Image 1 (cartoon, rainbow, N blue to C red):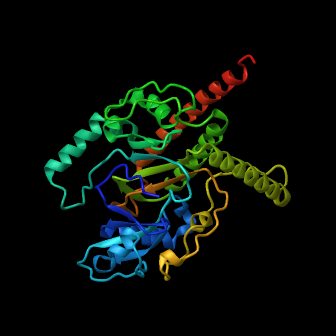
Image 2: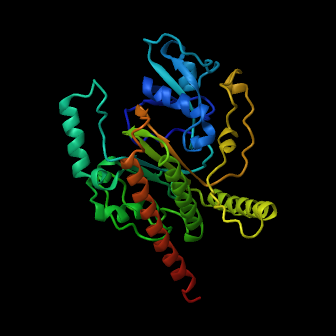
Image 3: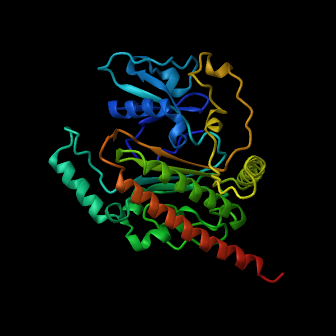
Length: 364
């Protein structure tokens, strides 16, 4: 499976031969962030790609990047002056037809501590934030793709997200999360024409949207207690576009919720108010990749059998300008973006519920 890189520098992400890991050129701050999050994985690192180590330019060869014969190099810090590459879990590997949204988070787009950021670039970033939904809403639809019954997904470029005003965000979310059979209300510059084959039926899309909303609430509760600045970071949202596989994932979530509630009732009684979150367990990310980098040639490794899992994932990505800031509080701009997105998802849930009611009330 190819990786749908919707934004960022072209060709900055490559896959290993079996598609389970991605290799991404990195900067020091991003390396440090992933290292710290892996050490503290219990405190919410479930919302960050699993980190397997760093490769240097000297041991990232054609074999590793292009999946031609040979081994993936072992973790190495190497020469500190050489380019470094993160080895991360591929979040879309478990999806048959991944629908993908890259959502730029935060109200500030420039790193004031980055000496390489010129005054001209800083001015451009301030202007972009002011003229888009970034400054007012803490988020921007960067780019997204939605699968159809055709061979290729419909990809909407970042020019569309930059063109949206606050009041147009709900229409953008309708395009991101379409209901199968309903027309898309917006024409997108540079994108393919809308298709009635876009999206999922309401009965499948609704539980996915509700689960995404629960995960956003969970992520927000974690980040509000962490003193951090995430400049230029994004939220990656992936959900299954294949109807059969998506239904399988919805069934898995329902069964998992039933088992969790039974366990809570057994252990704590009927009056327990513990909230259930339907996002993937930490271990689910490791079903297609071992705890360390593969040591055997990839073509000879037996691919693990796929097991049912949640039909969606959300994760924070892009930490080149992320740092912990003890004593300075949480990142209010990122929190605003998560709150805005959660409200948009909540509104979309109500719209899809109405669509589902309309279909069940149709005669015949």
